[in-house]
Length: 319
Image 1 (cartoon, one colour):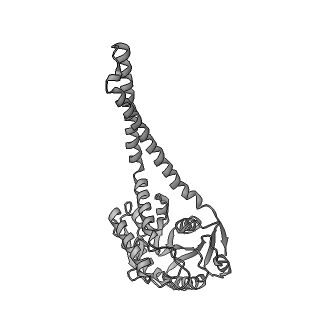
Image 2 (tube, one colour; image 1 turned 135 degrees about the horizontal axis):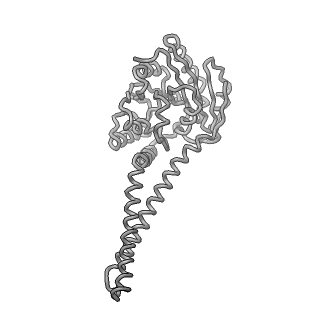
Image 3 (cartoon, helix red, strand yellow; image 1 turned 90 degrees about the horizontal axis):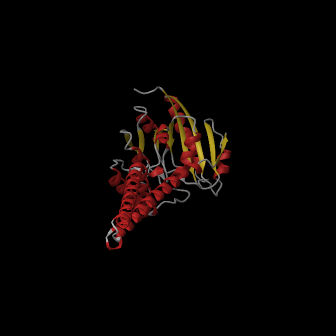
């Protein structure tokens, strides 16, 4: 069973997409009109300008939409993921539709994706670009390799983690510790907590205007994000284990020190000729190393947490 009335916030992160905005906006409005004719839906559009250096913001301000439209302007280039989080934070409705702003995603895919989403609002509907219209060596090959790594390291069944076209309930964002370029590992991070992720084949179009910033470097970003993701998923067990080893090492160093004092004061035996000094130094250093690791991990945790602070840096413009 599904609700007859649903509300959707369409979030579009943009960076130097001035040449694409007008056509993209027209396509979104046409699809919304089709959906409204057949369903009791409410829509809003949120465009997030991620510190563009072209005329993106000026074009956005000139739009005259009949559908509620909000422009969010980041005070500098913060990243696609932070732009998405900003859009979600400002959004009014509980159901989120994500869409790239380069016209390679087709807004007409909202129709089959929403149809799938209506069956179960706890499902994440994830786009699958089966037939990509990108250069093979610079885009498709790195993407295939990155997807392979993600699937192997996370046991995810998703074929196309890099597809930005998604529909989900915003409560997922509130219950997960997302970080970094989370939009590429979105499905992998939530896969452990929800059982329903539905992949829907979507249309993919060649990029006509603008320039993509993604390539082989994406593989390295994915690897770094995977390491941090696994760390944040099990940070407590890491802290407890390493912290326990540090305390245990200091305890053994204290025992060895007390034993050396006992040998000297009560038995009048020189501890220099025993292995106790070596044991004392070894466990003291081990304790310092383990506690240094804990402090390093805690620093990493704070860095990751502080990324969410930066997403507050934006201005809101309502049409």
